[in-house]
Image (cartoon, rainbow, N blue to C red):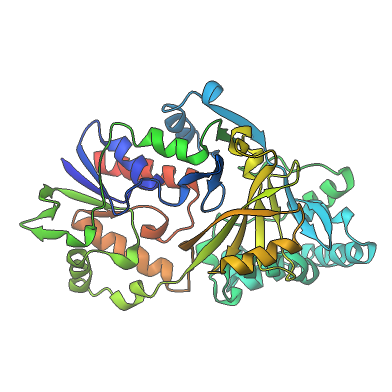
Length: 417
């Protein structure tokens, strides 16, 4: 079967690799480089993750086996412990914050524990039975802890009204606090070890760009190709002078080719809803910083617009090759001018010195109460016509690298059968 894959981010590269041995696969990329959100570049010979800092780990054994079939874990990667911290009232707290309540002021500790104990005596409510994300945060963590950390941080990063974010979308993505465990960890002062990225793997050279470069090997990728030119004729999809039996669309669902949009219109899908789905972009400023053992620093307070610092220079020493200092990426939600970011980093720890910056128009996808239902209907309709949606912006799901790979593996099984 001839299959066209539109988009060469981690989802597009993964699905192309899983299918290429049994099918004739061509990948189409609108840019002149593969990689999507996980692309990196070097600035003064220091590695700049242009959108966040991408690492690998997974709870899914199949994902692990597939991923490591392309790499030599011992020779090409380092395994690192996640050293995440929270900057709160000029103090560094451990992450997740609920396990480090003992570092807060005594008055706050007392109030938070009282609220958690009150919650523990109430009838249990499933997260999906709550109407929205804001209600969830208040109900599961208590008003004080929610207002100190969870609400301000999530408002910063999502840049939206949390009361409009449905719980159905967040299923499986949220920390589920166990009040017994919270109290136990605070008494015993135990560190978190069960999170999927409590440890992670990272390439010794070139970061996530190394992963892109390996996964694109032996693939037929056509760059600078605008998929909007796709047409349908006699059950075939025509693109770049070739006819394909199936299309796997890994790009932005809001920008589906006209021929695919027409399929949706014929099946009574509201295109105006799809084209108006909301995202947040991110502005990232690449900096030199003082030495620290932190890997991620979360910043919930409003004294700065920045919501986190990712110390990518700690992931591998080669990331700092062109500097005598450590390097990091400071991330802001939305479009923030470079000059403003330079002023903002003066408020942050580490004596930050700017090296470069990047604005990514689309980074975080946003759901409302209709989104999941509409996207499912779109996927069902298109699948019947030989078009499959895959990836963060095609499926409108907040996939990290491991979830993107998992989605590709699941889709490949459906296509093969």
